[in-house]
Each structure stands twice: as C-alpha cells, then as structure tokens.
Length: 224
Image: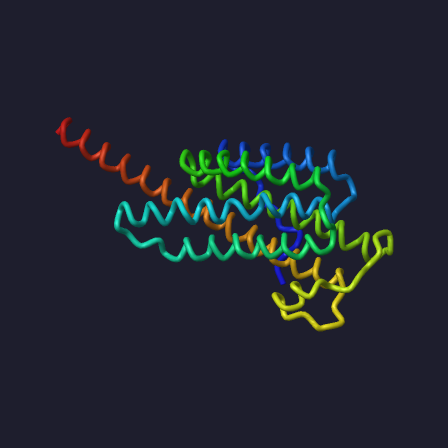
C-alpha cells in the first residue's frame, strides 16, 4: 500500500506553477461539489483520464519522429488513462450524473485536452508535476469520501459489478472497498508522475551541466 500522506514540496518555479494550478482547480471542485463525492468523482475522473492519453500520444509521436525508445513511458501512461477511465465507469453506477453534470463533463474534457496538450508540449516536467499534484488531491478527496462512508454520513452500498470484476473484489464488496482500491490507484499515479517529473528535471540538469563544462573548456582553450 502506498503512503497516503506523501506530498512533494515545490522546489522550483515549474513546481510552484503546477501546485498553484492544482490548488485553483481544487478550489473550483470544492466550491461546486462540496461533499457530493460521487458526483465530484464522475466529473473529475473524466478529466483525470485525459493526461495519460494525451501524454502517451505525444510521446508516441515523438518516439516515431526521433526514432528512439520511450523507455516504457508510453505504456505506463496509457495504462494510467485506462485505469482512470475505469474509475469513471465505476462511479457512473454510483452517482448517476445529471444532464447538467454531463454537460460540464463535455466542456471540462474539451478544455482540459487542449490545455494539457499545450502544457505538455511546452514543458513535460510541469505537465507531469501537475498530474502528480492532481493525484495528491485525489487521494485526499477519496480519504474524505471514505471517512463519510465509515461514519455513515453517506450510506454505503454494494459495489458495482464492473468494479468487482476490474479489481477482483469479493462479491460482497461495498462502496467502501471500491473507494479504498481507487484511492490506492491514485496514490500510485501520484508517485509515477512525480517520478517522471524528477527524471526530466535530472536530465535537464545533466544537459545544463554538460553544456557549462563544454563552454568552460572552450573558454579555457581560447585563453590559453
């Protein structure tokens, strides 16, 4: 089981932008949905399934264009997108979104696809960090959801069959069990995307160091 309280502290300007962007979207979600966790999940999981697919597609095209190996990133990201889609398919049976929420889903998905694709093209590091922070917030939201279910504030119910089949849950599993496994999924996505951002940052640092060394050597040769 992943550490549910793990948080990546912003270290540079890129991280701060990603963190601020995430907190802004969290504010909007809290304002609109409040404690309607099932409906919140339906809308947010629609958006959450976008980054993996967009990033996977862009990396796929980059791999083809540069004729270089992707080191397994594409499959990881596409698997993430599929997993998030299954979260959505599960909560459709729980929350049963209204016509207004379905409209919001369409608009939010359209805007986020374009926005995230633009961010990924400009800065892959920032894009992955954003998803890492998204998933941190998702873990928090599902933890709050689980507390409400355990306290009886939100009535528990049998787990949807689609969730039982996908996560191999017992036939007597309930919504609490579903929220737990989904929360674990989100924690895993959090760790993967923060790791990807760290790897990109490390690569940039190595390239910058190499360029500085070359520049320094050239300068010394000229002076000598």
